[in-house]
Amino acid sequence: MMLLPVKSIAETCYIATASNFYPTLKIIINTIGTAQYKISSGSSGKIFAQIMNKAPYDIFFSADQKRVNVLPETIKYNQKTYAYGKIVVWDKNANSDFNKQLAIKKLKDSKKIALANPKLAPYGDAAYEFLNTLKLDEKIRKYVFGENINQTLNFVKIGSVNVGVVSLAQIIQLKNEKKFEGGVWIVDSDLYSPIVQDVALLKNGSEKKSCDTIWKLLSEKKIKQLIKDTGYDFY
Image 1 (cartoon, rainbow, N blue to C red):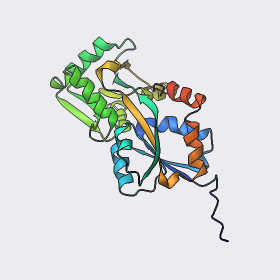
Image 2: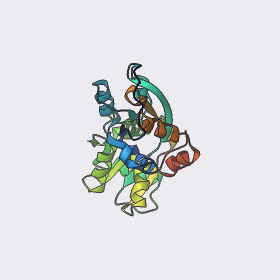
Image 3: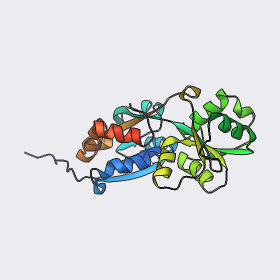
């Protein structure tokens, strides 16, 4: 009788994550052991395209829900919501008293602002919706699009653009690293559609114990609190 191989807990789990969640995911992974996991990051749109073209990922942390929803059943094994994202307006040259009124004035007066490409990045889509809701899109002369939310942050960080719409999680990370400068306004949640972030366990990883470990870990109270502490709402 032929025995089927038993999956080893040390088998590498290949994870693709939207850029915004990368720092938080690294913290989660470090509670388990990084040797079992390999992480790639980028825009949700690009990762989705790679998966559809048979990239050998085991888990996909998207910055939205719709891309996970449309993954075919031949690829997707399971899915669930892991976080709700938040966007902020960051002005590197502002003071700590930066608020809604000042943020809106800054957006109106700026020659250019940075945001993630709405076609590739859900945070860019939310940013554009927020600007459209307040009819600020009619005032802004030029957008500088980042391929993903990390590139967008870097445009402001290095001074290429003075103001940008980025994620709260990124700002918290900058503050934790003591690299934050300027002022930030957390955009009112009623000005854009909820950023529902889903994760997919793909069939490639459905039998790997290392993938199952992190899948179950996402439901633990301490990990939910960690996700909240790093700039997201509970799911």
